[in-house]
Length: 245
Image (tube, rainbow, N blue to C red; front, top):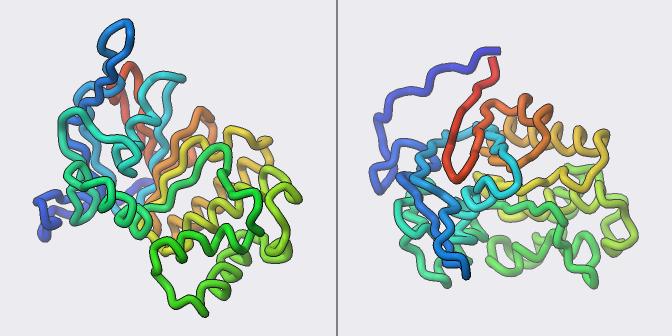
């Protein structure tokens, strides 16, 4: 179905950005033994609330570096990154960790669950770190989120006792722990079979319907076509943007 036109910017965010996420002329340069490597070359990108954006491109194209600018995992060499009312590129390291914990849920390709904690304890961890819910409510919320991803029955198992697809579901629950408005996923289906990958994608679609904004790096063209918008990155530049019709 066709997407509705975005309304004009009547009430910009604190720094003047009209969109939930805005990258303005973002450049990222790495110093290597062979010289300077330009991972990003003047990226401009806007993402609005309730969008599901797939970032696609070949290995080394700059797509993971791009989303690392948004999460603050990496910093631009030059340019500006705004997420809501926050100028991400201006945050100190201490400010960055606190801000990211409360505003962005990050999902990785390799799950990164702590192996010595049970699944429910892994989901509770962001709440403990950011102190976002009263301690006595954290277990209840973690169980609610595990139920949301159909993993409550495995709550007290260690990550090694469940499959890769199940671990990714728990990683999604953990990313939702502090109820962030934005979910950023870097190749979240890269280690999953096609059936499980589709299940994870369906869960992302449901989260967007519930009000989340999602950016997903993927090499899977078929999954990317199901997002509301696909952004093609090559040689550190956005080469094309495709909207679902």
